[in-house]
Length: 144
Ligand SMILES: Nc1nc2c([nH]c(=O)n2[C@H]2C[C@H](O)[C@@H](COP(=O)(O)OP(=O)(O)OP(=O)(O)O)O2)c(=O)[nH]1
Image (cartoon, rainbow, N blue to C red; front, top):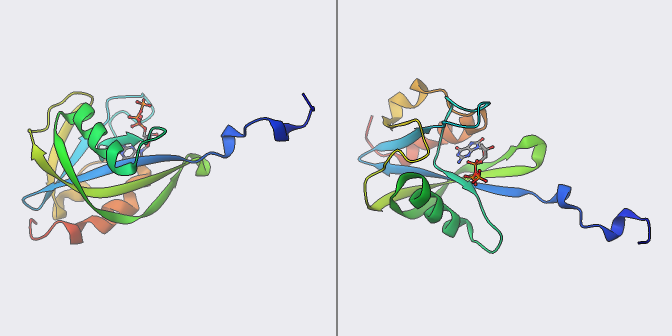
């Protein structure tokens, strides 16, 4: 060991990518209530999670929607910009998606709701989602 930190992989500088799916059907988006961990339980989010090593963002979205909701989705366009999370240690990227197989099941979430554009403010989103929620209506068509 040289005693310098340069020989040690600096995991702290790695930025995790979190992907979220804004699943849209008939002008409504699927909002999901987190059941855990305690700090975020009761807050609402887009289904999704961390991109695993070797996985594309697209693959991660498809996998997370299957794990969390039991559905197959087709991934569409980016919604809004990257949102920094955890003091810059992670970045949230949200994409539109549409259901191609199955109906959402409550597997990991406490509740879900299909919200029209004018109802987006009716649930307490995770704070980081605010700019994404603001950008969403133009992707939702005429469902208000
Ligand atoms: N899925 C998702 N996560 C979000 C959103 N907004 C937001 O701040 N987050 C944060 C909450 C968490 O700190 C992190 C995602 O972590 P997660 O626990 O859902 O990821 P995961 O499913 O891969 O988790 P795990 O299997 O490793 O426990 O991103 C959002 O809209 N969707």
